[in-house]
Length: 211
Image (tube, rainbow, N blue to C red; front, top):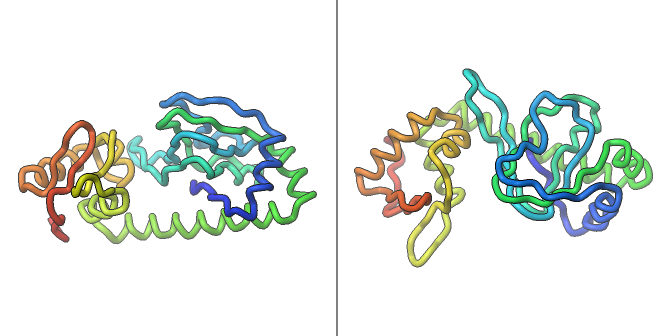
């Protein structure tokens, strides 16, 4: 489930949607929507952080993406189908929930909103295609390096993967077992490539291409 990020030209459309919905706060650990349940509304994110996950083989959870303020999710409810993923709150979030009937009515009145939702779905398919291709063609270590490169930030002259980012969360993001991630992090730490401290990971030197 890839969230849609709203361009400036559509800000007024989301403002109209917010007027039609109910806004409330969600605490960390809460499931806003669950995979397989009836899709009857969409959500606009004002504050916080959420992640979309799906259930994999053997009960393993795979994270599809992380979402923040200015994004929206759940627009697939226009198909009247079931939820394709669960969305969980990772940082206290403020969301507006809009019922499908209200969205359908506004879509009928505002064709530009319908176009924005279509563009969101196209973006989602592209990103999910890249995710599946990565899972199929790159080994676990390669996906781990890719994750670190994608989220690392510069902090006081060091490259840091900000936390808290548990081994379980890393495993879900790269589609691997927690045991495998534990072993890789331990090996990288022992080799002097990383330092795990206070729930974050410091990249001490360039990670090798293969492990």
